[in-house]
Amino acid sequence: MKWIIIVGIIVLIAAGFGLARHLSRSNGVEVTDDWPPEVKAQVEASQALRAKVQAEYPKLFLELRQCLFQNDPVGINFETNTDEYDPEVGTIIPRLPECTSQNDVLNVVHEEFTKWFGADVAGPKTNYTDVSEDIWKIWKARETQTEH
Image (cartoon, rainbow, N blue to C red; front, side):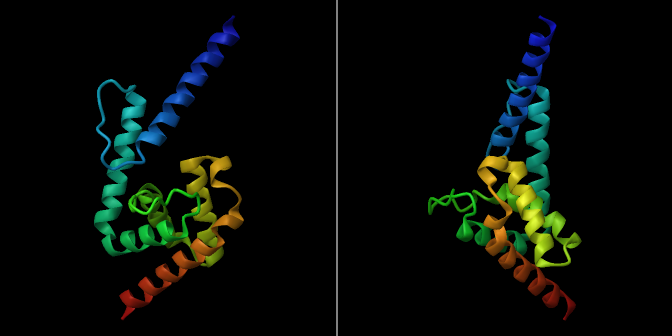
C-alpha cells in the first residue's frame, strides 16, 4: 500500500511539472491561485526569463523565432502562430555564448527541444541539423556586426 501512495505522489508531481511546461509555453498565460505553488512558480519563472532575454536581445530573439518557425523542427507551424517557438528561443539564446561551433549549437538546440517537448516529440538530434546551422550563421553574423 505504501508503494501505491508513493507512486501516486510521484505521478501527481510529474503531472504538475508537465502542466507547468505546457502552460509556460505561452507568454499570455494567466497564472492563477488555483495552480499548485510549484507549477505557478515554474510558469512565472519561465515567463520572466523569456521576457528578460527578449528585452536584452530583441533583434536576435526575432531572428531565431523566425528561423525556428521556418525550419519547424517539431511541426507546430500553422502559419499564424509565429510566436510558438518563443519558449525555446528564450532558453537557447542564453546558451549561445558557450557555443564554439555549429555542432555545439546542434547540441544546445536538441537539448532545449527535448526539455520542452520530451524526447519522443523532439526526436533525434539529426532533425536539428539545418536549424542549428542557420542559428550558428545568425549567431556568427551577430558577433561580426558587434565587433565593427
